[in-house]
Length: 253
Image 1 (cartoon, helix red, strand yellow):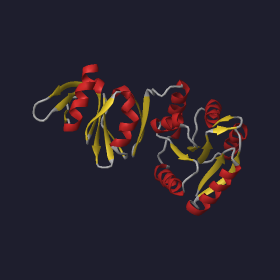
Image 2 (cartoon, one colour):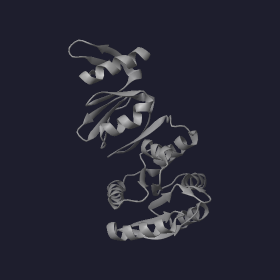
Image 3 (cartoon, helix red, strand yellow):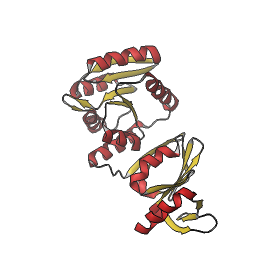
Image 4 (cartoon, one colour):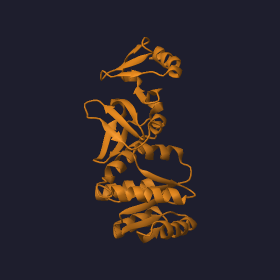
């Protein structure tokens, strides 16, 4: 059994979440609920749950306020936080860079089940406070130009400077990261997801299997079908439909 709490100022959502948990995740035991920043902090400190379902916007503040205050009091947060949000685009981007789980309102039962399955799989090795620290750092910058990204693997959580990522390579439904002065890191997410995340950070998809950091591009060779040479010495093919755009981007570097 896994202990949890719900913190949300919408009473209807709290009731709906309780019903869905009974139906789709009976192994989750609810220890209590709260509707504000103040009562949410007290609930977490008193109950010490393993999972916190946390709303973003509340009447007296935000879910981030709860995390910041708990960080100040406890030094770190051990609970697995699942954010619940309606449409906070900036926050969702911060969650994705921090590798944190979130549910969109209205909560979809399938999404809830998927999140619970994921939590059960990683619970024994999750180091949640690293995710939270990165999230709070990203949020505090009040800019969408985040500096770091969290990558979760079977070994644990890795935090990397985005500028240190040389390239990403698709391996079926996995993505392999090639990073300066670090062994490769394999993540169980598709290359498309990282193309969307890193596109605003100087990364370009040059092939079905390759996403590169343009700042780490050393040469573009037109012969033999076209390929690039990266700072790590790797030679990567450029697809026919990507050649024109790549040359245009290189001309602006």
